[in-house]
Length: 148
Image (cartoon, rainbow, N blue to C red; front, side, top):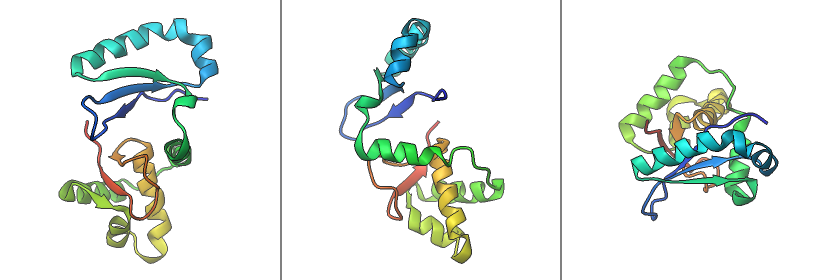
């Protein structure tokens, strides 16, 4: 198991965005004292930004969102041409939101489609592109450039 960045969640119908630290329950119990200072700082930062801060273990994230997160992990370390990445990001910046099928049709036709799908999942997995993780990861999924 390797360290993951905290997860930022911004529900459309929820008043405040959330910053969520997700750790396996056995690690959480074993290391809570060592991590206490980090969590305290995260809570302070969240308050400053007008967010809420929570610590979840894997039991709090279930179903499709968890399946999607596990699926996307395999794309995180893949390497792609920077030119392809820039091309997709430029299209998304120009459109604000675009479905997967549009990006594939525009940039990755024919034999390049599988590579394009992998690139889009990579961009989500690395946090450069965002989506609604509660939706199925398919050609109709809407993507947008991550906000810094």
